[in-house]
Image 1 (cartoon, rainbow, N blue to C red):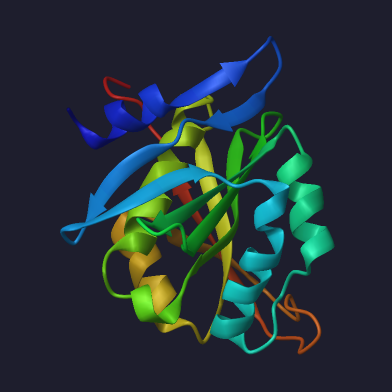
Image 2: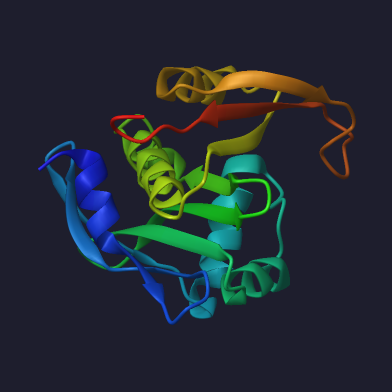
Length: 186
C-alpha cells in the first residue's frame, strides 16, 4: 500500500464538523517499532520537555499545548517507543478558508534524530492535510536552522517569505515555507 493511501485510511472525521482525529498505529522506522498516536492533554508536559531539551528553552508552555490539543481544528501526533516513552511530536492546524494546513510544531528528541522520524511525521501531516482538502502546507523555520530547511526542501517545500523578528523572546527571523498539495490525477 502506498504511503499516502495508508495515511488517508488512518485519518477520520468525526461528526459533520472538521474535528481532527488520528487512529493509533504501530510503525517501523529504521527497523525499530514505534507507536504513532494522537496526543492528549496528559502529554503536554512531555511535549514541553522535548522542546526544552532541543531548544534550551521550550517555545511553548504546557498551557499552550493543552489549548491547542483541545481545539477541533488542530491535530497533535506523538511517536512513542515500545516502552511508552514519547520521543517526537508534530502538530497541524487546518485553515479551510485559505486551504492551508499549517505545521505548528515538529520536534524529535536529540537521541532519536537522524533516523527518519521527522520525515515520517511530516509526511503523515501532509497526508492528513490532503485528506482534509487542503491545497497547501506551510510552516516557519528559523533562518539559521539549515538541517530543518534541508528536510523541508526534500519534502517539496519552498521558501515563501521571510518573517523578521518572528521568534519570541529573542527576535529571531524565520522563513515561511510552503508546499502546494495536489491529488493524484489533478
